[in-house]
Image 1 (cartoon, rainbow over the protein chains, first blue to last red):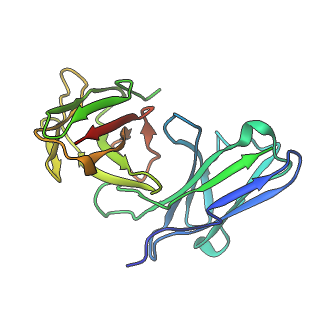
Image 2: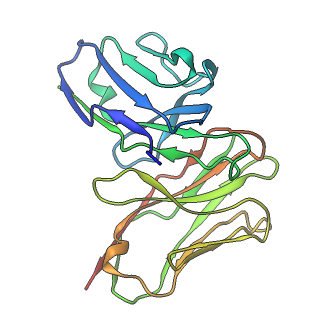
Length: 115
Length: 113
C-alpha cells in the first residue's frame, strides 16, 4: 500500500514569493491534516479536512495561507507571499474513520526555506 | 487546552543501555496517547499507542504505559541499539473522532557503539 505522498520534498524561495505544496493521502482515508514543524519543535496543526470540508482551520494564518482539497482526495497548501518565518517542514497526514483509533500516517514532508 | 511535555534532549546513550524518555500530558477527558519516531531524513512513524488507562503500548522493544493517575506515558526500552538513534515525539489526541494530534517538542536520542 502506498503511503502519503508529498511534493516537492524541498523548496527554496525568496521572501514575498508564492509557494505551493501538494499532498496525496492514503487511498480511502477521508481525513487529511496539514501540520507545520518548526526546527526543534513538534508538529502543529494548520488545517484538517474531513473529505472536502475544512473542519478545523483555526490555526491557519488566513492572510497568507490557503488550502484546498477538491474532490476530497489530494490537497494543496499555498503560501502567498512567503515570509522568513515560514521556513519549516510542512507535513501532511491522513487517517481513516473507524480504523485503529485515530492513527495518523505522515508523509515525508516538504522542507521550505525562505531567504 | 491539551498539551504534552516531554523531557528535553539530546539524550546520548551507549549501545545496550536502558532508555527512558519522560512524557506527561494535560488533557480533558480520556485522550489517546502515542509515541512517534522520526529517523534521520524520514517522515514521522507511529511507534506505539495506548487508548485507555493502564494500556501498555509496545513495538520494536519499546514500551509505554498509559498512567492516568500521573498523566504520564513514559517511553522505555531495555537495551538500545545504534539504529534507535532518532527523534521521539510524544503526542495525544482527544478520545473522539479523527482529531488532530498535539505533540511534544521531541527528544533526540543518539546511541553510540
